[in-house]
Length: 241
Image 1 (cartoon, one colour):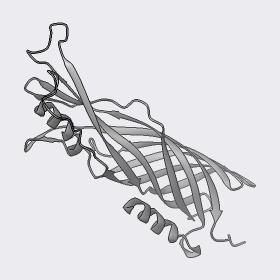
Image 2 (cartoon, rainbow, N blue to C red):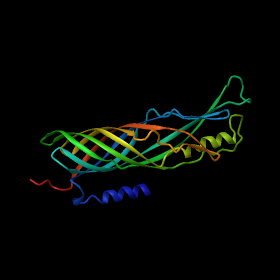
Image 3 (cartoon, helix red, strand yellow):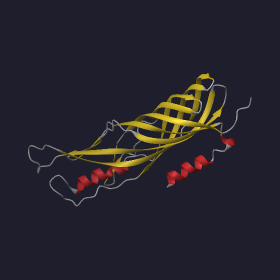
């Protein structure tokens, strides 16, 4: 509800005096996560399971103001869902010799609310066709919707309360706020446009580390994504001749 309210407020501010054009569209996010962090807890290893491919829907809005004939400033809001996947690998003296180790995992869903603030430069402008480059700084607010993994333990030789606590500690990893930058190219004909851009983290890690039993462990992680979008441009204010 909070996310929907923020989006509605943003859209509600798009009156004539606030911008030249409003882009309304949706895109798809192909996100990759990568981390070299491995936490060793006695006989248990904890690490992030790399997310290599995703295809998440991302609605977005963007306001555009002209600065010069070729430069425009813009402010947007975009939203998509992702997740942090945590994996544990451990062994026990109770395991058969044919099973040297067991892996368990759990994830926490994250709702990402982004506000890109940037510039665009028009490369081509012929009649109703336009091609332009874009670059933005992007504050990101990440809101978790975590559900603990819950079973009656111990349940068999491959479950203990410790393992349950370890995978549920995935909740402690995501940083609720960080900065990205994004860059890409867009093509627009009449009021319809296509956009393709890349998003990267500004900081070396977007994690708050890994916390378990009142102890903190270094846990650096990063994400990057490629986004493809389709939009419709609404003219909010007529250009002066």
